[in-house]
Image (cartoon, rainbow, N blue to C red; front, side):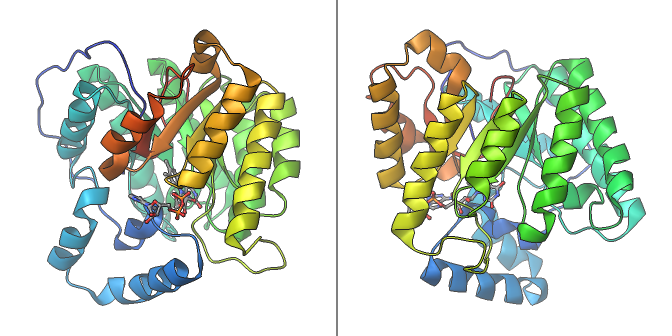
Amino acid sequence: MVSGQLQEKEPNIPHYTPRPPITICPNSITGGVGTFAGMKLLDSLISAVLPITPKPLVRVVAKKYIAGETLNDAMATVARLNHEGTMATVDVLGEFVKNPDVARQETNNNIAVIEEITRRGVESNLSVKLTSLGLDIDKEFCWENMRRVFQAAARTGNFVRIDMENSPYTDSTIELARRAHAEFPGHVGIVLQAYLRRTQQDIRQLAAEGMHFRLCKGIYVESEAIAFKGREEVQQNYLDCLNIILDHGCYVGIATHDDVLIDGARAIIAERKLPPSSMNSRCCWACATPNAASLSGRVTTCGSMSRLVATGTATPSAV
Ligand SMILES: Cc1cc2nc3c(=O)[nH]c(=O)nc-3n(C[C@H](O)[C@H](O)[C@H](O)COP(=O)(O)OP(=O)(O)OC[C@H]3O[C@@H](n4cnc5c(N)ncnc54)[C@H](O)[C@@H]3O)c2cc1C
């Protein structure tokens, strides 16, 4: 899964060489789609049938959301996005890992992505789900794996965005993100979900520590006790959360394809009169790859905005 932000300069794309394949986990292909009732039902149905769906069929459906089956494919997609003026984030698909050896291999795969980004000189960072690094096995084991990934990011001057998974993992994901931010400042960001009732409070706590954010609606099915369920209340909470992040002067990746939120975010940015120079250090737009071109076209019209929404996932050094 890839995303990005507009760049003025031409990236330097060195020669590509084959690298070990990245495993695609079929359960991950719904990651960029759907938030509301109908879409949730569809997502649940897709998740239920995916494990028994032949892989070639999965590939056809997932193709437009997946950067490639190998690291080489993913880097070619990143290079193409860079040429189109968009930065990228690479997500190695694979989550809810139960086997320590698999989690270690996933850790190695994520480190390989970071190293390859550096080797090729492409404009990309990494996004990672903590259950792929062993969060379901043991929190401290996951932390050991995370540290290896963040050490690679720090060594290469890159940035890792910690994706947010479903609510059983919210507390531990935030706790580990805070630990990572304390040890590797400038290399760590977290995703928060506007559909969760707790998110404004989480933002306040994390913003006080200078965290980098990506704000999305949230993709999982959560109960009404902990999550807003109505489309408009999720949208309102999204914009409220965005305001709180900007009030704290923190960086935010605006991850949405929703016209209401894109227009709302544009209005907030205009109202705050954020100058282009500060936009570069405060904000980017993030979306899923299939939408990048249309989105960037719309966001360029956003006056002071010098970084634009693309589709897909989070972004690099600043995102
Ligand atoms: C960059 C990025 C990172 C994300 N990271 C996380 C995460 O870590 N944790 C998490 O829970 N969720 C994550 N999500 C998913 C997010 O929470 C939403 O479920 C998803 O973005 C759909 O909500 P929306 O705001 O785009 O609005 P919607 O109202 O769902 O969609 C608005 C319009 O965009 C279309 N659309 C929606 N998704 C896509 C797509 N992928 N490509 C093309 N068109 C689309 C819809 O069909 C609709 O027409 C991420 C999303 C993005 C874009």
